Length: 152
Ligand code: 5CA
Image (cartoon, rainbow, N blue to C red):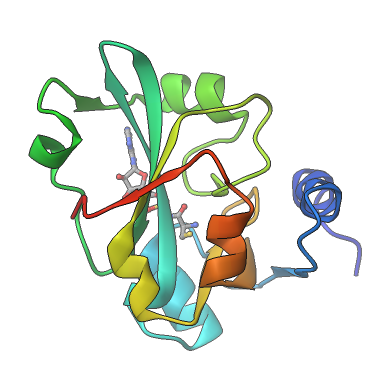
């Protein structure tokens, strides 16, 4: 079945980034990490949350394991979670479908090192019903400018 246009656009961006990962569109919601974990049958920690925060320098995307919470004090303190409009402005995607890579424009990114517990992770692929799986190191390798830090 044809992918939703947004998921299709993201699939093309994955290919352009050299990541051989297939976007899967599911009948069930994958809007939250818990829903995505249930839909694909993995533990919630293996779902990558792509969360946008705002600090004095602007938006910062945090890739966090689904079973962890970003500790904003580890981001420097003067930081708050982005609004839905800010998320769309920073990434080009709406909350619930924000992918970890392949955004409309470059966004400062921090990867929570706890993701390295899992050889493979699942991430949003543009919509609240689309996900892709990728080796954790391939994902991190696709964001060479990202800092990998303990932020949860
Ligand atoms: N598709 C799933 C699994 S990959 C997903 O996108 N999960 S997520 O964690 O990356 O995105 C949901 C997150 O968006 C929530 O954990 C929450 O931090 C954030 N969020 C939800 N609603 C709002 C809101 N109204 N304003 C700001 N952030 C929100």
